[in-house]
Length: 224
Image 1 (cartoon, rainbow, N blue to C red):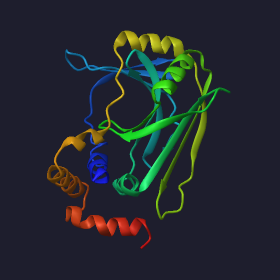
Image 2: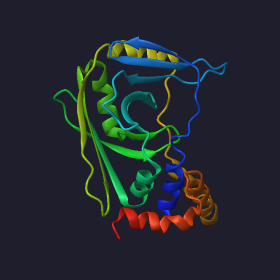
Image 3: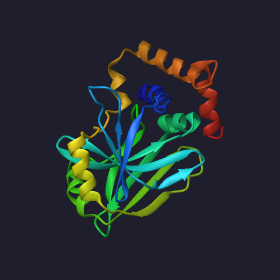
Image 4: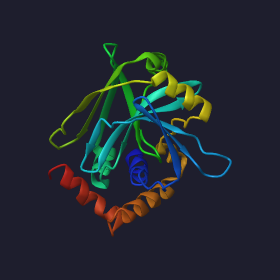
């Protein structure tokens, strides 16, 4: 049942609406603040260069608020619905982040409305938040595996950082976006409601028979 919950969420992750926004370059960072009328929406700070940009799939380093901390996270966008479903039901995503020669910190990945977010847990969040202002470079690493499939290439890249402390001050003053809760929070709904959500999500993704197409899809990705 958890797979169905995640599946329904996966298919709605990248349906965000376009918003007018201002952009400010601060060193290697870009601060993006929506220009919508009050109450104003929070701002987003992201690294200017994505660490991944292939075939419509992007991976970016962003800074979001986790309580009082400003925490670096990895945001993946543009993944195909087929890969999302296969990963949600029979796969695993691993991600990590490392500043300079410091320790590599593991991240927890989960789908949200905004993107597929990989963020640090409590202790790692405090360590990364403390190291971020003075960091001169960051190395990010992401791997995705699906049961029955050949492992996908590991994505790893090191990017230079500059103007980070100034960018963090501007972000805090402007109002940062918070780390979104995972879509799996809908697990409190009844099984019937979850099945209906998954069926609608599949149909919206281009599978006319909804859940009836799920078995054939899984068989395809497991090589049966």
